[in-house]
Image 1 (cartoon, rainbow, N blue to C red):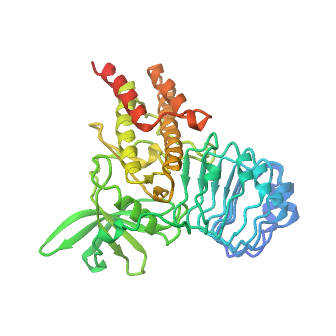
Image 2: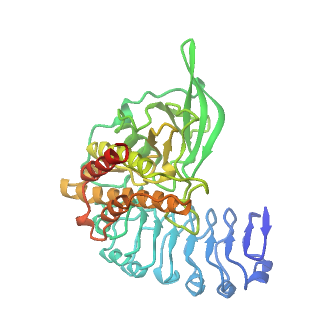
Image 3: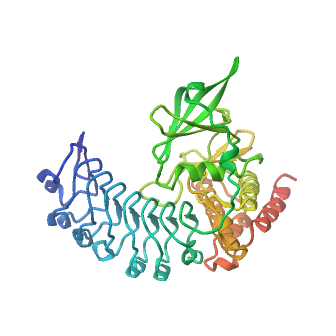
Length: 431
């Protein structure tokens, strides 16, 4: 596959070197995607691509991050997912770095100098061999989303808990001592692949695909949802961790019920869930390369104050339920919420959920404050989208969002307080 334009180049041809024609566009190129090739190094000429902002090199053969990246004057978004990188040298990366994905590599050390990336907003580090996180990561004051799942951390990453902008965090699947000995996943039936017939794909994401399926049980069949994971390690973490933490939080009206586990004929993990009616649709769309960590929306999407309050009440209730079961969601976004025309919703996708049973009660409160920040960002995004479509929302919702995202993490309210405040507003909106 070869797609070449002055600003965007994508090539999948088992390359072991960058073709010369790439550099014919050195003055205009903004996005270079050379994922799924056989590259192991980069030429010095890459620094001559003066407008290059986005570089995707996932699924190649890099064992290190080439130093030339630090010399690229506009580069701020870099992906090296699924290579063989064992060492991450911070001085090989541009100081303007905004988004770094090194998921599924072999990195065992995060150097103290990594804290110099004060503009970094998104860090995907799941599926490595990291044993500790340096205190200097506190210098990454702009971090909003971070994934440290499925590493070898010996204690939870408390160094992250007071970062002023952090809203989305995952850290399950590590070597922490303690935690709950009771595994909810063991209570889920294991359903043979022969009993499950895939009908059609509904959607696809970083962690796998979601399909309509038919489940055979005795003489009857029923329609269900089947999530098939794209591997044991996803961009967010370990597939089994996702199933375990979702299973721990069943029995709430805003959480989709699980029916059991399965495996495909290829051996991939599968999860069977109650089928959400097709009348439910995502509340928003995923972030773009431009928005980085913030959701996007369909152009016509608009939300009244009452609609935002209704979403807020249900989401806050679902998050409280998770926290009561020692689980944080870690990925609370409008695109991970399914909403019906009647206003009912489901908080979905536990791929970035974290097990809080390994934390002290004080640490669990600190993680709750991070979840509160994500809740505030959700309100902000809905308010912003309504403003774009000419809908004025009650200023008190914006004030509540501001309190939830306060830069002093300890000053944020508990979710029970947030829910109570938004319920008061809802009473006024519907009176």
